[in-house]
Structure formats: C-alpha cells, structure tokens
Image 1: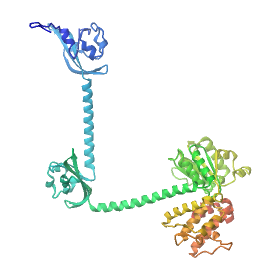
Image 2 (image 1 turned 180 degrees about the vertical axis):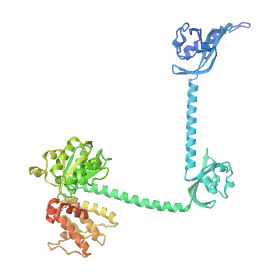
Image 3 (image 1 turned 30 degrees about the vertical axis):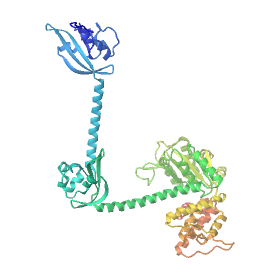
Image 4 (image 1 turned 120 degrees about the vertical axis):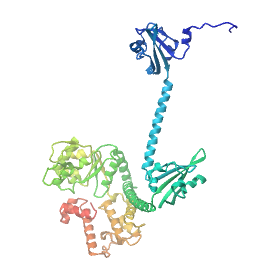
Length: 576
C-alpha cells in the first residue's frame, strides 16, 4: 500500500510489456532490437531471446523491412502467421532525421475476421435467397399479392399486376383499395382464418383464389392473396385433364397389378415342387450364371426368365426376348448380332443394333433354343465364350455384358446324339437348369390359376365374373392339359368371350372339353361363320401342339403349314 506522497517508478519496458499488442523493433539490417512480452503470447513464438535475430527468419512475410525501402509507414496491413490473422502497422523510426530503425505493432484479429467472414457469407446467402425469391415470385404463373396490416401492398408479382395492366413496381406502396374495389382477401386481417378456393371477380376476371393471414409472434401483421386459377374455365379444363390422367393411371396400375399378380400366382402355387423351384430361382437370380429352362410348351418358362431378371442386379437393365424358332434362319444372325449399313441388300440405312447389344447390362432370353440351326449355334457359342459380338458387315468386335437365359421343350440330349445340337453349347447353357413341371403334375394349383386368370380378364373385359360352376371345374380337373398354363389361359379367355352371366359354365368351354358322361362333344352354340371358323382353327392349332408335345416343327407338318405360317396363326390366336 502506498503512503501519501510516495510515487511508483515504471519503466517504458514495463509499460510496453503490459500492452495487448505485440511490438517488435528492428535496425536497418533487419535484426530485432526489441520485442515485448506480447510477441511471445500473440505470435506463439517459443520463449527465447529474439534480440539480434533476423526478423525475416522469425516472422516470415512480415513486410517490416519494406519500411527501409521507402521510409513510409504501412498502416492496417493484414497477414497470417501460425494460423493467426494479424493486423499490423509498420512505422519508420527517425533520429535527428536519419532512418535508424522500424517498429511493427501486431493485433490478433482472428476472431473478428472469422466473424466478419461469416457475416459476409450469411449476407451473400441472404442476397442469393432474396434474388431467388424475386425470380420465383415474378415467374410464378399464379398471381401473388401481400399487404401489411394497414392494407398497403408490400409485395406482388407480374402475374397479379397484369390483371390491372400495370407492373409490380406500380402497385407496391399503394393501398389495396386504390387498386380495386372489395379486395376480399384482406378480410383475413380481421378474422385471422385462411380461406382456400373461393370464386371472386378481379377487375372483370372470374378467378379462383386463396387468402391467408401472415402471423408473427401471435399477431396478424399482414395478409397474403393467391390467384389459383385466372379463369374458372381453367379449373374445368384441369379437372377434365386430371380425370383423364387418373383413368390412365388406374389403367396402368391395374395392368401392372395384373402382371405382377399373375406372375406371383403362376409361379408361387401350393405345389411343393413349384415352391422349391421359385425359391431356388430367387437365389440363382443374384448370380450372373447362364440358366437353361426346360419344360413342355406353355409351362411358364418365360415367367421364370422374367423372375430371374427382375430379382437380379440387372433388374434396371433391359429384358430382351428372342424366339429362335420364329425367326427364319437367314435372319436370325442379324437379329441377334445386328448389322452395319450396306451389309446386305435391303439393309437399313445406318445399320441396326442386334438383340445382344440391346440387352447390354440386362438379360437376353432365347426361347426355343432347341430350334436353332447348327451354324448359328457355333456363332452363339463364340459369343458366350468371348463375351463379344461382331455385327454383319463389320470386323470390329464389340463387348457385351449380357446374362443369357435359354429355354426349350426339346430333348437336347437326344439332339446331341443325333448331331442336331452342339454338345459344347449345351454345357455353356446348362450351368443352372430348371425343369418346370407340366400343369397335369401340379393340379393342386389349378384352382388358384383359374382365379388368377379370372381376375386378369375381369379387368381386361370390364366384367365381374365370380368363378366357374362345379361341373366346369370337374371337367377342367380331369383334363390332361397338354398345352399347360397357356392352354388354361386361352380357355378362360375364350369363356369370357362366350359367357352371358357372372359364372363360367361348361357351354363356354371349347368343343374338345364339352364332354359329359363320355358323350360326344357339343356342337357350337351359335355365332357367325367367321367366329365359328376362327374357333375351329384355334382349337385345331391347340390340338396339333398338344399331340406334338409342343414341338412346333412337328405341329406345322401335321397341319400342312410352313413353320412361318404356323407362327402367323399362333400369333393371330395369341398362342405363341
């Protein structure tokens, strides 16, 4: 404690050591001649004697030596040292008019700089959002207007101002009552309740609008009006369009539901063998192995191929199907591998992609692989080995990433013995094999399959068929189903074309099924001659396929048709 009259002696060094700013002085050679304590604290320099050290070595980039070049002070210079943002002022030291040194004062402004940077960033973000908001408001199709609680317009857009043949700038700042009489949307300033979809006359336009209060801290501070439709007729047109889109959506939803439901019901029945096959197929789908599907015609081989695709990692890629028996031999190569422009007479300008390229990153389903000619088999084998194809008319190989699923109802082993099918191709295809049972071996699924097809054709024909009679069911249960699931589907579809009630009866079945107690088939139950002949032709096709166990080449010979002619008729009657 100081006594009265006592004084304290404080040196200049003590004063400078207690300042919050770092101070360094150097001589003309750049050697430090003074540094206060703050230099060590602010600049984070280790605690050693800096006097005599080169300032450039201790604080690189300080700029202090520039003072000796021009003798002029540099004030408020910002630089970074040891991750610290500093504000520095450099001043020359004159003695008797001679420049004898220079001093620098450093102030740590890191926190301040970060704060300013954040403020600048936030300001730019705010400006950007404001610009976006202005663009959105002015390009909005809807008319928008905002008023404050004094009913002064504070914001509007061009869509709203166009009702009065003015610009938004002409309206902002004016009382809303000056613009038009009875501005109904301002009623929300009193009620605080929003109203949507009211019809109002706006300067001669019958509009549909909404009014919404603007509330801050529980207080109504303004109102927002929005023109939803500039003309009531727009609403009528939109309603009509929505109804049309809704109908279209319902159609596609039903179509997809029908497709998915059919696949699930057809593949996931009660039959233990089918259940095991589906479970195995779901596991195999995850791999990229080639799969061979075997079974009689109409058993659902294509459904298994689709299942293998949709449950695989290639599900987003294409699923491409080629029926090897339906394409003439001389065209199958170009169909599979494509061709270049000018490859042959009649080749399309610009060439054409083959099915392998179209199926890249997806799945290629080769149906009726057993009907492929030997020469084509050799080319297919090379593609499977090299994973590349060559278009007709080109010598440039093209890589393809395709998973191959093949299907046949032929006895490939017998064909190999008869030199009709390549053994090496057989082993390439036969990595994983699924033998799909015929319908007669899974009759416990028949009832569920009938229900599935009734649901399908109820949607397709816009009918409400509830089921089949017991008599009809018994006949179907006794049938041997040589045409399998496809035959069943065709029979149910035929019944839908014939029935006149809500239940499928025996009379709605094809003639070859209309047998009661061993008696002869019933005659046709009326109809035009064209319809009767068409029905006879379809049943003849089914019979020929059944007796040939699905072998289309043999069925064509039995009917006296060429293979191409048979396929045209199969397509006509949807039996392909």
